[in-house]
Image (cartoon, rainbow, N blue to C red; front, side):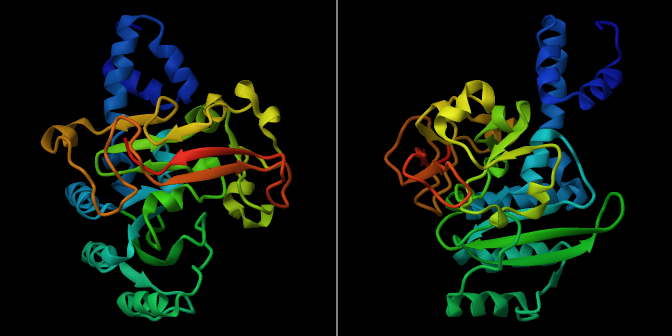
Length: 323
């Protein structure tokens, strides 16, 4: 393996699942170094975004994410950690309402055309104001919840492969992190910010390929998640059923915060060098910190049935902050 060309080693790593990649890194020091070199390239936002934006525009997106506190989540963030680049994936951007028009302008300027639903105005700004004034519930798509004011789709031909690239802007009622913590399944609780990527349940999601349903009914869970053979969705669970071997040690800790020891955190090093200690202050719940600051807390209840939380369910407190 020491004599293997770098291109061959990268190809080998690209075809390995995460557990196998970890095992490869433990063979010897040389393998560890090569896996680290591969990871520095594979786990970068540019690779995930190549279907949606040209290389020069990726930095611009990360800049506007820094300015507005916008984050990437949903299926695109899941595929970032699995290192898959699929032609039919949506890019889900979550932003606060006072930054919505700025994000609309950015996406439109990159060649995307707004694709309104039947119940939306054909102008995205007017559609946004209609949703704000009506104070109606969000159109239920993907994994969004009542924390989303509404979603807005922008479409253009994909840059790689065939079909269309879709950027979906979800305008949130409170803050983006609150929305991610309201997702119906732990498998989608993955976040990409302008400077780092976070997976809240990495061992369960990427090692054991298990997701825990947090919805009150199975029908609330997106069809593409329920029908995905790659992940096993478990809805009828209690804390005793889980255990470390069942889904991962992430569920054995009652107090969690984003960026804690159970979180898989990938720093985008180049951006940290250029903007060290940059804080995102657009939301009271998004704070850069390495310790337990006082912040809003959200509870995740693991239900013992698919018909809502039972008295025997276990509640885990999750801090809506970024470390």
